[in-house]
Length: 57
Image (cartoon, rainbow, N blue to C red; front, side):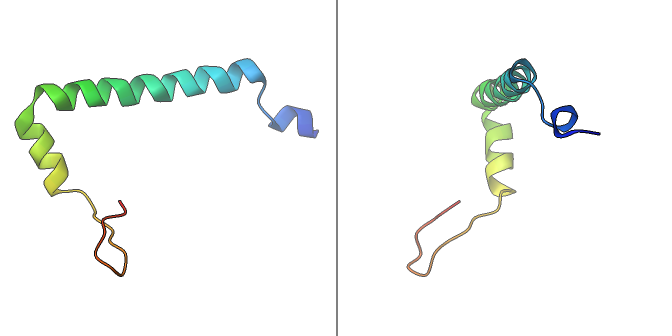
């Protein structure tokens, strides 16, 4: 097995990037259409704050 067999080609990387981007856009569209689902997701999300109380994530 050589290194060329492990590293994906450019078209494979681009295809996967488009799949991920499409999934994110579909999820954002669905969340924007259903306010109750949006509040459910925000209530069940993890919030990370720094030492000064600023929300990082």
